[in-house]
Length: 111
Image 1 (tube, rainbow, N blue to C red):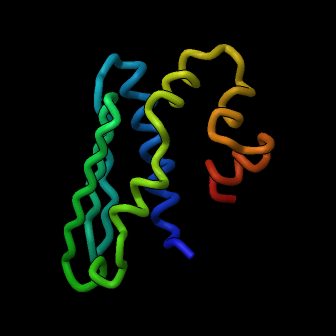
Image 2 (image 1 turned 90 degrees about the vertical axis):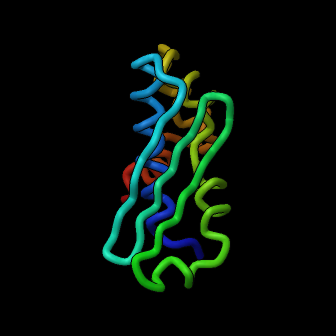
Image 3 (image 1 turned 180 degrees about the vertical axis):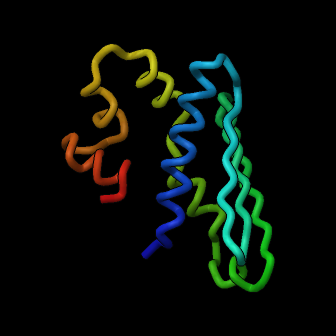
């Protein structure tokens, strides 16, 4: 089971990519910070993803392959771009591979 913060990072990055696309930028960044660690994630329009893990204690060291898990859970820039410029709201949940809008909202809002 993946840690909850991985989904939080995915949601934060989705918002950051949307804002970057609307602003005409080619990269989006977020920082997820706790007392034990900081995770800095940058996604580039070209598909390059950078994950920097900074451990203040042993918190992040106890999570093997965390950078890969974060990368695997990030939204695809091209799919987000399609959502931003699409007039059809239904495309948003479908483009993420969800069966229905309810599943998408559960992922998106964590409820």
